[in-house]
Structures are given as C-alpha cells and as structure tokens.
Image 1 (cartoon, rainbow, N blue to C red):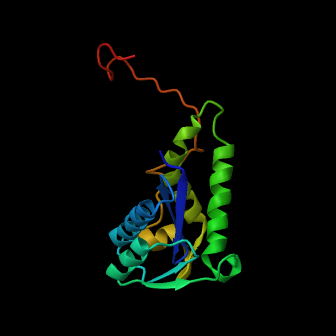
Image 2: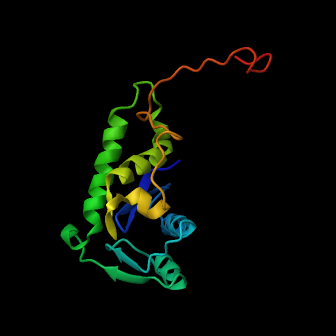
Length: 171
C-alpha cells in the first residue's frame, strides 16, 4: 500500500520511511515515525531543512517537537545538503530493485527498505566522526554481519524443513 518514500538525513545517516500517499496526514505520520525512530537511538534532530513541500500540520508537528524549520529555495537542489543523500538513496533503491529475482513480487518493494537502509548506511561516513559508518554512529555499534548476514535483496531461496521440524500436515 506504499507508493512513496520520505528520505531523511541526520548526521550522514539516511533513514527511509515508506508513505502511502503525499497527503498531509501521511507526511505527518512519516515525520512522526522518523522522529520517533531517531529518538529510539538517543538522537533528536533540532533543525529540519525542507523544500517547498510542507503543510500546516507538518509545521505544527515541528513546533511541538521544538524543531527549527529552514526552507531552501524551490527548484534549487544545490541549496539542500540532503539532496546528495537523497540521490544516493534513490540510486541504491533502484539498483536493489534491478537485481531482485524475476519472480519477486514488485508490490513488496517497501519490504526491502530496511535492508537498503542498512547497506546504504554501512557504506556512508557518520558526519561527527567520519572514521565510523553512519550506521555505527546512529546505532552506537557496528553492524554485525556474522549475527545478521545480508544476502542480495529478492534472492530466490529454497528452505527445507525436516519432518522433525515441521508440523504434521505442513507443506
């Protein structure tokens, strides 16, 4: 049911939040989820730079959260530092979708966003300390590839459950 992605950047970390539509209520919901997500890891954005896509409801949310809003001139992508990160995220998502198995149901594209976010941020530097990845900077630990190995998104796999592991009539 998602058709859009809100891309936010904080200290070099790119967070991807799926959205059903571009309605004001969906923007508020996406911003709320994003702010809550950053707070979960002990980070609180204090400045939000926006292009000209906003609403009274979004501005009200920022006032409630005591976030200063700065607007960049419309159609001037160079004025917004986040534009480079947005382009990186867009290219990463397109490349990921271009390499999924042919039988992958494309209506599940938004299910790939968590892994896209992990792979993207393990490759990007954390702004306050460029010697660590953006993932490590936000989460406080390096991504553990041994505990959570990553395979290419949309890879077709076959799982064999032995008769001892599955229920009596399971396929």
